[in-house]
Amino acid sequence: MRFSSGRALRDQPAHAVTFFGMSGVGKTTLAGLLQKHDWFQYSVDYRIGTRYMDEHIVDNFKREAMRNPFLRQLLRSDSIYIRSNISFENLSPLSTYLGKPGNPELGGLSFAEYRRRQAQHRQAEVRALLDVPEFIERAKDIYGYSHFVCDSGGSLCEVVDATDDADEVLACLAAHTMLVYIRGTPEHTRMLVERFRAHPKPMYYTPAFLDATWRGFKAKHGLSDDDQVDPDEFAVWGFEQLLAHRIPRYEAIAARYGYTIDMHDIPAVRTESDLLDLLERTIDAQVTP
Image 1 (tube, rainbow, N blue to C red):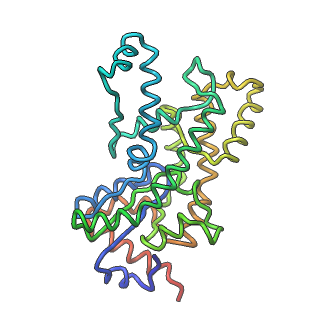
Image 2 (cartoon, helix red, strand yellow):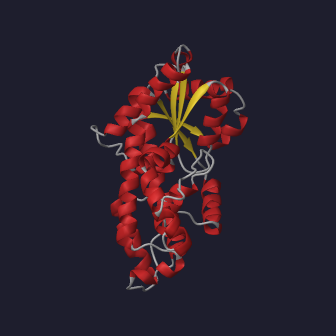
Image 3 (tube, rainbow, N blue to C red):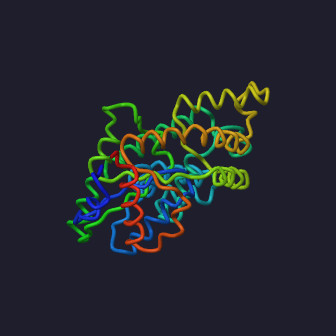
């Protein structure tokens, strides 16, 4: 959605917004705030984990459990069941399933298996994003919500192409929601890297970027065998490369389809009215005279 003025946004009887940007810029904070003001909150990562990746996640739990003789017998006799308990605040089951490539003795996956799981995630994320119009209608029909906020994952920019006029996901999101990029700062980027070094976690990479990053890491460290790669070391190095890769992709989406706000504006947003004021000012500032 594009608006001729900030007033045009205010005059809408119902609002629908998709926030996107790097981890930690405030997407979930704003979505949670709006949920308290009677907006329907749609978490893309939650939808991925509970609808499109749930069976993969649970099957992975079962494979691990089958290695334990005690649990193996209970599973085979249907005496116990295993499920994922994903929530908006805890996406660990999804992250654990995606894993990290490298030495299996250090918890790493084979590179082929890692790529397979990455492909599953890409498909799941695309499907979850294309579900947005359906959930806008379901929010109204079932729960009576007029307003809708989509809390997208950090990898949104990896599953779309802002230069492609036929990009299905961007066309869908732009037709049904106002796309708002929350821009980080250099200080925030450095903080993300330090936080990631302390607690490396799985990430999503496009296939070409992943292959190039994998080759680059092995060459940098003089490794010839995939099993020589330390999964955490690769995750940290890959994350640093990924941040620089993602920023221009976010900016391209915002320039063509949406609007940009800065993460340092988020702390001042305490109410729904505060956010609408910010969006109104943003639209007016970005409207070409």
